[in-house]
Every structure is written in C-alpha cells, then in structure tokens.
Image (cartoon, rainbow, N blue to C red; front, top):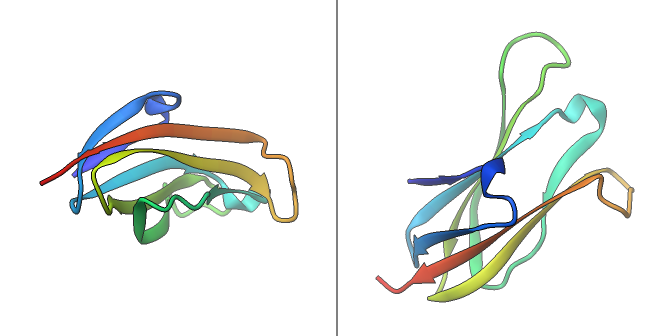
Length: 102
C-alpha cells in the first residue's frame, strides 16, 4: 500500500482507482491540535485512526487515513491542523493524487 507522508506536502502521488492508499501525518492531540481532512468528492475515506508512539501521557503519534480514489483523474487532498473551534489552521498539508484507471 502506498503511504503518503509529510515529505509529499505540496507534491503529488500516483495511485490506482479503487485501490487503498494511506496518508500519515504526525499529531499530538493532547496539545489540542488535530488534523482535519477536507472533503474531496473523488476519494472515499476507508478509515481514520491515530496511533501513539509510546505509553507516556502527552506523547504524540501519527494520524492515519486510509483512502481510495473512486475514479480516474486528479484531486488535491487537503488536511488542516487546528484546534477545535479554530478557524485558521496552524498548518496545512496538500498533495495532488493522480489516479489511473485499473
């Protein structure tokens, strides 16, 4: 499975329509900041999980979205890092997903 991470920010990734891929971004929800996936009509969210990197309280981890492109073409995925209720994001992650037909 293709994994898209912070190094892909502002870039692109090639996927196959109907096959899952994952986006992973570092996150520490104990600070109040979490990533929010913006709706994209050409991708379908399969799962959204957080995995911490240890057992210590306050330790960060990774936010993981498993997605699939629902059709061939290009779409920009956007994730925003913000606190609940905050309008302006503290950080933004964007990647253009180029989906080819099976």
